[in-house]
Length: 182
Image 1 (cartoon, rainbow, N blue to C red):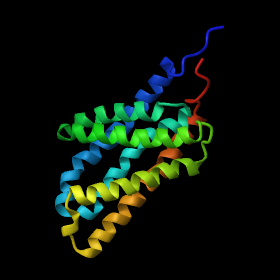
Image 2 (image 1 turned 90 degrees about the vertical axis):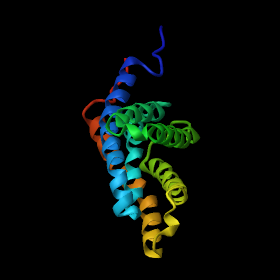
Image 3 (image 1 turned 45 degrees about the horizontal axis):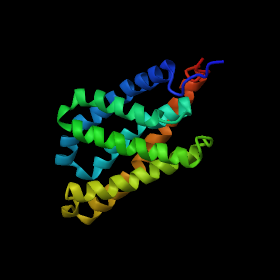
Image 4 (image 1 turned 120 degrees about the horizontal axis):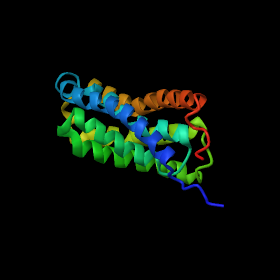
């Protein structure tokens, strides 16, 4: 009896569909980045949190290895069509966020799919966003209240986007998107 490959055509098509939808969201977030950084930089972490969606939705729907990473890369390519100046950042973020989400899933041997597991990866991503962007965008020059708001929003944002992504993923599972990959 032939064994079904881990990444069947069906799985890849689901990853592609999720990647396109979440890539549009990421592209919009990327397009808004310059405006937010110029007018309200403490809100920037809220935009970056949107980039957790591809992996969260793909893992919630498919519950398989590599789907977060694949979906993130596809979403980054779609987002780049909306904001081509950010292609390097989109791809870097996709690889980083996808790798973190895959690592957390791998730590549970791809067997634990409770919401807590997704929120662990969201918290890790939030801390990384907060620290890296704080220094990269020189947010230390902001008023102390804005620095605190930025750090808090950067950590909370991926958690909030993760909750939304889990809701979408559960809806897709109920709709039958996750049925057996025969």
